[in-house]
Image (cartoon, rainbow, N blue to C red; front, side, top):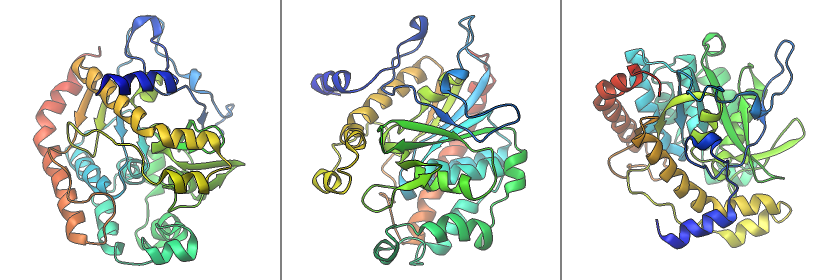
Length: 343
């Protein structure tokens, strides 16, 4: 990355300081975790989960899934291989499509993400300009997030809730422009609305309101939430990316339209405008953690057949197959890394 870009990032982004010199600074300020009420426990602040005082990382292994709309079928392919091979994690965090497809890992539903995407990608209710015009959402809110998991390709809530793996997702707070991390430990409508919020792309989605808050695409505030998982005590993390090595995110397009549509949310506009800087900085952080053995990165070797959105089932299948192939090729190395002593 060019020196001027890094200088710009340091000036514009808020950094989480290194605790006692351990680990890199990350360009995401700490933000609350939204959690469903638990017995004798209300919504918990992020600081409730800290690296232990001995200075040694926890033995917990986490999974970090970035988004990328239908490029997430690459991630789905990798995750299906994990499930077939019995590879499990103590916790995971997903952003946008990473959350929407990643939830199937916790529910143990091999092949589900590919199945419903191929079946409904040509259905206007699932994803279409018609849906955008009629409902305000390119991906139909009611169809995708409620009817489909309830009736058309049922989501296994019993398996999801019985799996002890923690499941977090990331949204962007419209008022603060900062990330909100929600732990899905509840069944039904509200959990699905959090997933919808995490994947609600600006311009082509409506703002999602949950419990008085307003949220959109989590990728705008924290595209690769590796630092978040480390702050929760996950000493080692597998990071699945949907862009090949060497990818550099460019400045967000359509800024004029975005400023017009979201003029009431200046901090959200700041997050939108700075996203490419933060994303590229996060890629550098992921690379450093991988070099230190604290992260294991899985990514496609080349640009995926699906750029972002498609109505062609064959492209979805190709993207998924690349994910499966990558997962299978990575298995032996990944198992050795997971079995090694915590750093």
